[in-house]
Image 1 (tube, helix red, strand yellow):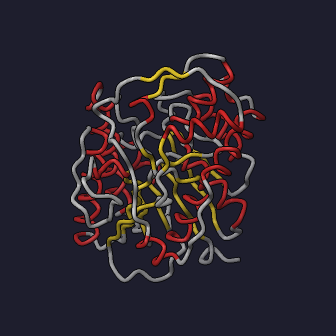
Image 2: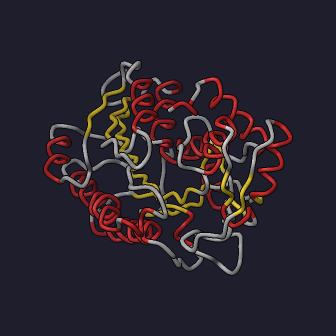
Length: 328
């Protein structure tokens, strides 16, 4: 294989849930890829699981890691020197809806200025494609569901606003700089190696520690749970798409199968074990329900399989228990 045949893919946020999962899958399944991963090891949630993820990736010869903060322009420019990436998958972001109201400046720096820095650096040697993570949160509380890519965006928190701005930046830059962009509006992603600050892993931890689980909105809301394997398969299909008819795309990455949270709790208690629940009021920063229409991405990728939420939860819990993640 010549250097011309090799795909050099930069993944930002490679220590994160989706970034790690994508990098590992590509390294395991595609001999033509070399993965460059960057991350700043933000302390929004435990650095221990991020360290374990990167340690796992470093076992692969075709993986190279650099600790870099994307909102530090000079640092990023220096990293890009003498490198030619065929693809960039931008997954680095300041996560967390509620924390975005506490420290909004951090979201502006990382999610907006960081994205602009990345695009500016990519202009040194343009990649074939920049794929970036948006979020289902950009829709806000739509009156009509499922949400379609053409629907009006009404973000109700700073995190969602930052993702909407990213989409506008990509739309402008795709035309002005003649770069291909694909934005992925990820809906509630869950699975092995998942984030400890998310609903399912909080549930698992409460069960193992025999503590009360605080159930937001009394569980009377729906989430479009999307299993990590499906998320990665869709993302890969988009990365490897040979011909793009447009310079800028937006896709919902979702199962199109919203599940009520109380139903998840009932399934967990039936299959895994009883847990003490305390119902609390809905946080006003959270959208009430999420439900995405995925017809567009199915048509684009020709990939139609989705993991049943019951199997996904059982797989996630098995991995969580076997790896003793509750101890982190």
